[in-house]
Image (tube, rainbow, N blue to C red; front, top):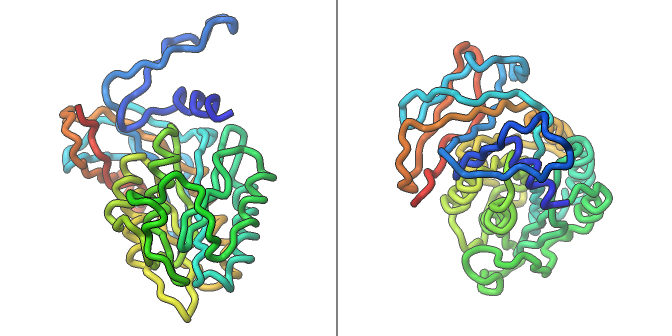
Length: 325
């Protein structure tokens, strides 16, 4: 299932590292072998959601409505689509540190409903919990029952570690404690171990107070690895009066990768927050361009997207890392 999923996504989109060329075979007999995927000129892909001043999503825009700049140089948009059926590879990350003890049951209930709402044919999702450790509760699957069981199996500070390496250092070297929250490590390992080998639309939806305690990677490293794997990060920011919260961290991580933060002030608004994320995941535009700077230097390139209608605002990632020879 997973190999087929990857092939489908390779056929509809390209990664930052390389574009994918598929011969024109629309009239080929079904008996022929699958098309060969070839690497050629670099194509930069951007997934964008556009809202008006009243925060309403704009679903029917044209290519001419968008202007894309790389390092302040406008780029020619070579590929444009508002196809809603492009497959999504989704990671659901649940904060199971002590600060979430009172909210976890409500979060599990809402998260289950979210996956049932957002996942469609061709999509896959995984579930990871993080507290003092990082735990893979379910690998990528389209099995809703398996995902539901995984979400409901999350426990506060469960001692399990099933990721290969939760951060650049071995998991056992992490500073442990009841208040440990390996937030940055969870993002790092979800991207490097899981999303790095996926293609197409990739997103992490994270329920957390964003107050990291005990990770071996820093915030900038977690953001960089998400950018390198083209993962968009959406954060549902939940908080308890007795514990700290880091809205600044959540905002930086989401904005740099093209996602958004929704402040969930109370559990009764949690489902509304999930509904907003589901809407954004489904109502996205895909834009691609061949950068005027063709150097393979591995450097970070800044992306800025502007709308022809200044009343509209696009939510998209702010940059990418060029391939390196």
